[in-house]
Amino acid sequence: MRYLLVMALMLMILSTPFAQTEQTKVDYLSNNGFGNSVIGHAGEYYDGITYIAYQGPLEDAYVAAYDHKANSWVGPYKAGISTMGKTAGKKIDNHGKPTLVVDSQGYIHLVFGGHGGTPDLGKNRLGNYHDGKQMHVVSKRPKDITEWEVVDNITPFGTYSQFLKMDNGNIYLFYRHGAHRSNWVYQISKDDCQTFSPPVSIVLTKEIEGTETYPVQYDSWYLNFNRGNDNDIVVAFNYHLCKGPKHDGERHNAYYMKFDTDSQEWLNVKGEKLKLPITKEYADEMALVRNSGERWTHNGMAAVDKKGRPQITSYEGAHDGLKHGGPKDLMHYYWNGEDWLGGNVGLPTGAKGYLQASKKQEINLLVHTKVGKTTEVAKWKSASRAEKFKKAAVLLPNKSGRILLSKMIRNAHPNARFLAAEKIKGSNYTKMYLIGAQGPIERLQIEADIAKK
Ligand code: ZN
Image (cartoon, rainbow, N blue to C red; front, side, top):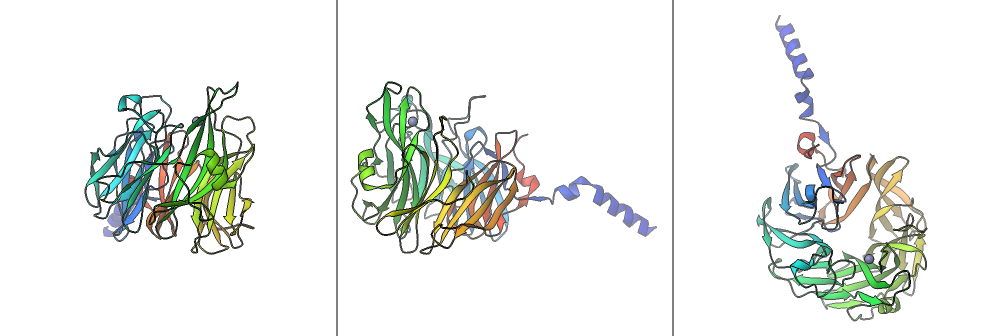
């Protein structure tokens, strides 16, 4: 009798859906990433915890945290409200994705929500307008992501906002000061983002002579900032010919420069000092890595090896008469002391991601690629200066949706090095992954599935 009772009880437990569902783990931390939900510098490891930020529902800024010791997740919490993304049916803007930094006291700061701003916000002296409002928010308490407040100490005219932090605690905020026809600038904070120095223009936007088809033409730019060695920042950039009235995605070339933040000097690859702001003519003369000719490029990133030898990636393809150009191949260039060498590394077309250079000849590319009908994130390795790449490890295998990657998380824990967003089919939402040496960090499905269906 007692045996039967136990059997019945066991059957009941086994057949109760809750008993299984509550323990079911998934490889993502949330499913409420929204649109192209992640940008470059979107995470930091600080005192045992990895903090990450991404664009969530209504294009607002969300933050989550993973405690490595307790093996537990907190959040995501809504940390900031964007002025964009609130009009039903409007195309997702995707430009105001949050960048994150933790200051020396453990307060977490985000800058987000900008796509050039609008004329009602005032006069943009360094560029033009489009939409949104660049905003700064800070956590109310150190190491606590549950409550946030707005800090009114940056210009609203920002796009592609990026925080970089130096070993001396100085925090650099980089952004494009407006929409396409705007200078790219930086500001420095030496007091944990309480104040920022006035914006300094790095590259200049400039009206140039038009043609019959395109009477309005501007020099315009895309810049990508990364930490180099010591307190250096390395920059990969490309050129955008911004045309009107029929605007398209025409972008060319690849350029490299370095910002030595100790001496506050900008240098080209030969160590020659650069005068800011940089014009197209000056960039061609002083900082050109690759002249792509008629072919169009997407901007990649710069990295240096332990001895400071620079390399960059770029993405290049034929124009093919398409508004944003044809499919692009991953290109890799390295400086041999006299010239830039390299080219197409032979990865599948469309591969995109992160460049790491540790030793003289060794290059690691952390990229997402298509594999048949699926997508994956994998590390590709070359021991001989990009002559031959081998897939060294698959970190996120066999996914069904399009993938986007963040940059490396600042001061990263080995188990949480970067963020990936995977588009959920038939929806504007993405699954968010925090990935490290062991692959993605798991979470209980009941905690991760938070997006409204
Ligand atoms: Zn443009």
